[in-house]
Length: 121
Image 1 (cartoon, rainbow, N blue to C red):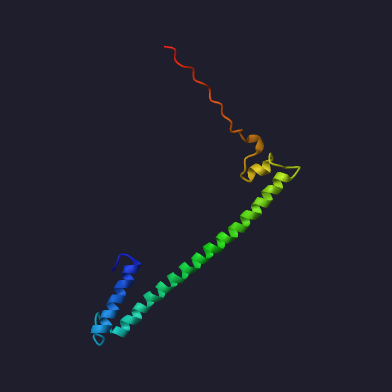
Image 2 (image 1 turned 60 degrees about the vertical axis):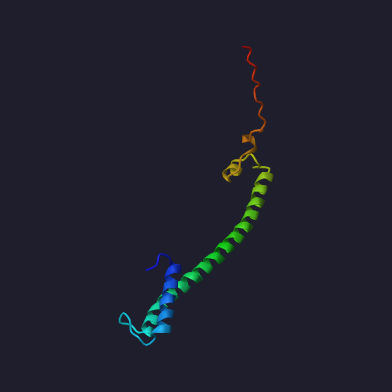
């Protein structure tokens, strides 16, 4: 039939509209217009199901993102608590296992490049 679901739907509607308009009382392919419409109703129901599921998916993704934002705030509180804990702090294994770089492992960021001596040739 068609290459894409949208093209398939357009073709289905085009055939139905043409049949209704120009030859409603004729039988084609061993089917009356009413029989074909009943047959097409299954496809329409599946299309509606897909549309409903896409809507539900979009809503679920939005809810997940909102939930993740709340969790991210709580994670910041937990990490700040680990950093502030006198028994643990920012150099602890727990802090590192949470995915952060311990302060003792951080480099200063200062780089002193060696000066290149000019060629005397």
